[in-house]
Image 1 (cartoon, chains in turn cyan, yellow):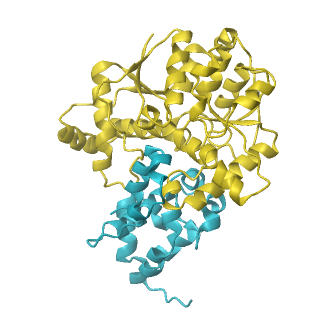
Image 2 (spheres, rainbow over the protein chains, first blue to last red; image 1 turned 90 degrees about the horizontal axis):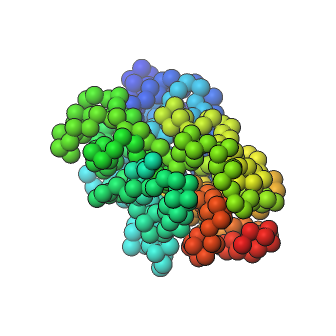
Image 3 (cartoon, rainbow over the protein chains, first blue to last red; image 1 turned 45 degrees about the vertical axis):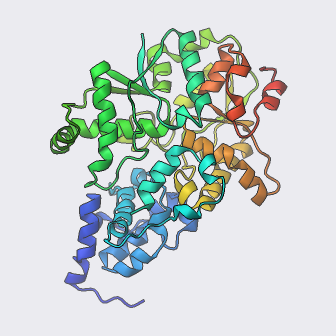
Length: 137
Length: 289
């Protein structure tokens, strides 16, 4: 993919929004990949967390919001704990979820009626309560 | 001394065995868990979006009510512990958010509660050496893997529970009980957490890696501090077995269940019927029934 870099592109509105919600400075990231290396769910991600940060800084909003990376984040904070630049990456992943979930048309990531039979009885409440907070508009 | 106690939703239902064994053991150890009045769900996730004040209200209200009853608050569930401890610290440090929250919940809470995990009481208030002397039935020969998960430890600076990468508190506890703590590299890895609702297959895979690593290092059982972890590593073993045919299930205990055995409680009061993988054959083999 060819990307033309301009000052406007790097200081884009999308990145600003993500920084505002997450409270993190994305420009601190130097792409070492420690977050992705330690992420327990990276094996299922389309792109790693460090790539998501880079794409965000390049203003590639549609591409970033289209990958499964931040939906798979389990907020385990391993990346946050290991980032040498002190970026709370889990907050960045949550901010990306929020960008989608806060859109005025409901953008639920999971559909409760589609849960398999017996699922509600089996799974503990904490999983539902935290899951709903992460996946529902 | 008694401790004000916040059980949380799951300990009141699907992890009753965790709650009950902790209460029974504390009586044997000379303290009582005094249940907080009118408690609610803590929200089960600390809001990572910095502008989400709404998700801080439930844990703040719990903290403010607890402060009216005492100076410390104890939890067992690692998720509740994380949410409550982080919220408490935020109220302490962020004056602007503190005012907003207090204004909303009509309280005046300043963040001056001590938040304790049950394991911290055992370590710091009783002491593992004291605890060891109280053991009636040592768990000799039981190779158990202490599984920390995420929420007890991270973020390290806020939780202050133990070392960031190589914690030992949980192993020290198991050794005090007479068990042999299995060291394994996945002890601080995530079980998949709430992905059991969002992407169940991913959570199953996480659980498989953790269990596989523990088994490879010689563990005969896992020990957990969290009903979310327990769901993923215990109840999902049937799913793992379907995918990986050579997988041999191993029992997952709450640490209070092992404490109960060591303290000499009757195994029939330890709620093993709520464990997904039946721990009785292993306990029988080890002569611990």
